[in-house]
Image 1 (tube, helix red, strand yellow):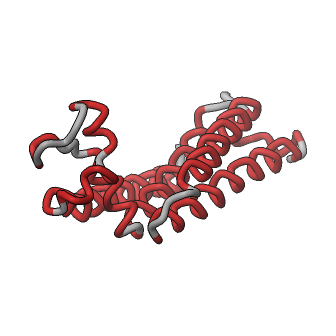
Image 2: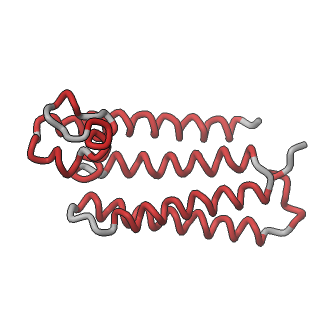
Image 3: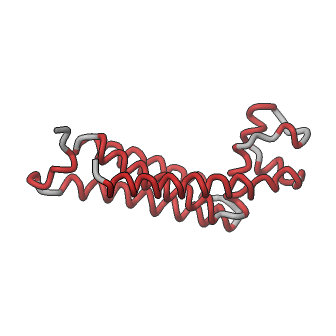
Length: 159
């Protein structure tokens, strides 16, 4: 495997880890906003029934809170995770497999976009458009890979 692949993978992972840590930190402000627990802690409500105190809040709810009110680093998480999916998928799967993977993840991101489309926050609206854009881009990329001439198939072989 080439240095170009590993460097792209390394940069993608660094961006993903860094943006995840910053998002987690920004979302920890949820602990100090008890009036927001009902709207920004759905995972905790699924786990505990209702959120009675800050000890009941799941760490995953921090990402939801950060996405609603500080969406920059959650957006970096989405972009870097999508990039890593494409990068690793191209290396691992055959031409047909990568097309299926791209369409699958594209549809998942489009579904997340439609789920967030009713969000009243600016962060939710930004992430709606980001999921929509990335989902469509993955589906378009799948179509481009489908239309590539067969003699350019060197990245998609398992030799």
